[in-house]
Structures are given as C-alpha cells and as structure tokens.
Length: 622
Image 1 (tube, rainbow, N blue to C red):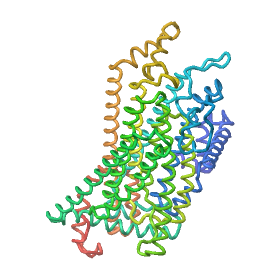
Image 2: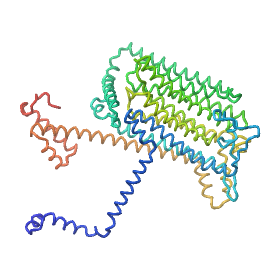
Image 3: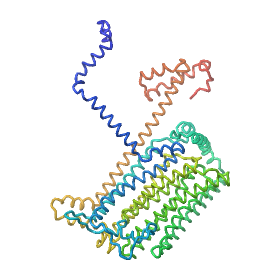
Image 4: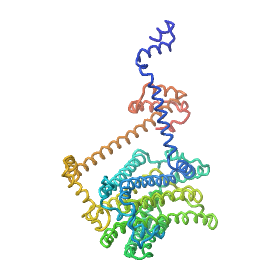
C-alpha cells in the first residue's frame, strides 16, 4: 500500500524507501566518524594479519613441500617447526629467570686450574662444560647483586614447574583440538563416494605430484573396497596362519626391545669411566634406534595385514616400545645408581643426556644419508626395480618425539639443553628438506594425514611428556639433592624449598593468605579430589555436546539427501528444478516437515507412468 501511495503521489519508489529508512534511523548520523574508525580498524587488523603471515617461519618452504609431496609429508615439517618453537620458549624462560641472574651474580665459572677447553667437550659434554651454567651443579643457592636479592632456589623450581605445566597444557590442547576435528566431527572416508569426492589434497600443485596423487587415490579406492571382503573371505586356516605370523612378529619385536634394554643397562655401568666407555652408551643407543626399526619394517613385509592403516599402527607401536624401553632403563639407572654414587649426580645425568642428544643428531644425519640418498642410488642405478625411496613420515616423526623426550627429561639437569635442541632442529629442517627434494618421492600409499597428525601429538603427550614429567616430579619430590653442588644443596628434597619459603612467609602478616592457600589447598587431598570431579564432569558435558553435534550432522546430511530427491522429482515431472527450489525456499522447510510429505512423493512416483519419467518404474530410487 505504501508503494502504491508513493506511485500515486508521483514519488519514486526508491525515494520513498530512502525517506522511510531515514525516518526509522534518525541517530545514524550522530557519530559520523564511526565508519572511518571501523575502516581504520579493519585496515589495522589486515595489516597485522599480513605482517604475521610475512613473519611466519618457513612459510615458503612449507608451501613448496606441501605442493610437491602432499599433506602427509608436510605434517612432519609442521611438527618439527612446533617442536622448535617449543624449545625456543624453553630457552627464553630458562635463560631469563635462571641463567641471567646467576651470571649477574657470578659471571666467571669456577673451573679448576688443571681443566682447560680442548674441543672434545663439544662431543662428551664433560670437562670444561661441567663447571659452566650448562649444568645443574654450576648454580648457587643464593645470589645477590648490590641491593637486589634474588632467590635462585625458588626461581629454579618455579621456572621448571611453570614450563612443564605450560608444555603439558599446550600439547593437551593441541591433541584435544586435533582429535575433535579429525575423529569426532569428521566422517570416515572409507566409503567410495566420500573417499572419491572429499580426500583430494588441494595443497598439491606440482604436475608430477598431481599424477602421483591420482594414482594413490586409485590404489586407496581399491584397498578400501577389498578391505571388508578380505576379512570375510579368509578361511579359518588362513586366519590362524595370519594370527600365528602376527604373534611371532610381535614376540620377536618385543624380545628385541627387551634385549636392547638389558644391553643398555649393562653398558651403563661403565659410562662414567674412561673416555671411550663414556661415548659407548650414547653410540649404542643411537645405533639401536637407527637399525632395529629397519628390522621392524622388514617384519611388515612378511605380515599380511588387511589394511595399510593397521600396518602403520603396528610399526609405530613397536618403535615406541623400543625407544621408551631404552629411555626407561636409562632413567632407572640414573635414579637408582648414579644418584647414590656421585657427589654431584645431577650434573652427571645432565652430561649423559647431552651425549644422547649429540649422538642422536649425528645418527639422524646418517639416517638421511643411508636411508634416503643411498637408497636412491641403489634404486636408480643398481636395482631399478626398487625405484626412488619414499619419505617415511612415521619413522621420522618418532625420531622427533624421541629427541623432544630427551629435552624434557634434561630440563632439570641441564637448563640450557634447549640451546642444543634449537641448533639440532634448525639443521635437521634444512637437511630433511634437501634430502626430501633430491632423494625422495611422494608416498604411494598414504593414510589420513590429519588423523596421523593426531596420533603423533597423542604419542608426544603419552608416553613422551607424561614419562618426562614423572621423572622430573620424582626427582623433585623423592630424591635427595647433592650435598656439595647445585641450588638445592642441604635440603631433603627439591620441593623442600617451597616449605622453607612458606615458613618464612608466616612471619609476614601481608602474606597470610599465601600461607593459608598452601596449607589448605596445595597440601589438601580434598582439593585435588574436587578438581578431579570437576574435570570428569566437564569431560562428560563435552562428550554429550559432541554426541549431539554428531547427531545434528547426521540429520542435516539426511535433509540434504531428502531435498535432492525432491529436486529429482520436480525435474522429472515439471521439467525444471526452479519451482521446487522456490517452493522450498518460500516454506523454509525442515527435515521433519519434509518427512511428512515424503510418502506422498513416493506414491506419486508409483502412480506416474514410466514414459513420463523417462525410465522404468523399477529403476526409480527408493
């Protein structure tokens, strides 16, 4: 009616709309500077985003690797980058709160006159380095510079505790986010249509890599279609034979891990003697971590797994058992043998970890040379049937997890050990990039890269981080610190520094609340019981929310299927899809309303003659 009045009065329709809109919003011009301010904010936000993208570490390299080799190989370099940044963070807080105050108090290391730097310390970590701030024993219990009093004991304890808590929270958050996106809210792509339409890696831009990815997708479709039939077509005799092969392979692999652990424990008795024996343990440990996984890969050649995913999982579990059993034996030896034999045993453990990190770095480089370069030479010149080697993502990621476990264990015994890890990861990144481009080809049979990333983060959390945290906590709460070196000398345990601090705060009236919190919260079992109940309740709530979202996604997919059937019916009967589209947009129909009309549509299909539909009646969809 307003449009008719506007046309009868001679006023254009758009002018009437403009005048009506201006009458309804009289205060729009009260702040004329607001649109310009919003534009400035948008420009500032876009500038910050552009600067952040420009400062992103190795952005061009990541695009190159992802475009040529796909997301599965890219996940390794992203994982390496995240561990590098984690070690940078560790170095910054340790150097700022522990090392800098110590150097300000006493910047000259107390080195005996007969000890000089010979260069061999770069390999052994002993000698001159033993008396520097690289290890626990060089730090003093108290440091004061002029009028400033700095408590090294509290700084050492709370810095390491805060770092471990932040690392655990970061890894746990990454694992939960990745699990939600890749397992809870994602769909299995085992179905042929979903796998064909939804698994293409759009980061691949190289033409050769695109052809390789097409071939990979074809192989995966074949495997996914035959996977279910393989499990049902096996006879009982074949199933028993497969079970026997798997049982034998697992028995041999577990026995090898146990035997390697016993050998390492025997060699550890001679680690802190003369120089050749000192280097023997890290050499043997790194050699085992390089050679034994090759035997595990050989076992997989003879095992008959129904799917590639199970084969990869079996290989990962065997490698994790091997590496963590070796580290467990070493930690047991350090806690029960070294802690009772040496006067400054924390520095001795720090030296052992230093040597493990150095030799692990050397053997990683040797693995890239022998495992990739020589394999390419053999496969292209001597045995052409082998071809160009693939980049083993699982084995390389497990090597990174092992290296980060060493860094977490050594954070208490060697606060500056992250410096070595930073250098190691930087060199390793460029070495692996060059080796990948020059010697490797994209994996022929790749799994779900996103889900494999979730598994790697889960392994980084458990057993890597949890085991490291357990050792550091046991050292702080149960073991007696050295009596003649370190910031905690003279105390019954490392945690005793907190008790001493609280006893001193009882004399300060302003700190009465801190003493009450320590006595009634930190040392109360009821508090941790309530925290556990709250965490379980929150987990249950999130689990229910997740189940509701999965059900909602299922209903929305069913609605898409139902609407597509209606479009098909409209196309066959009316000759076009536009009437159905406009009708459903007008009604804003939901899935439940459509189910009410679905029997009518099915009966309409049944009543129509086959000639009007252009196909036989029995060929119509259900």
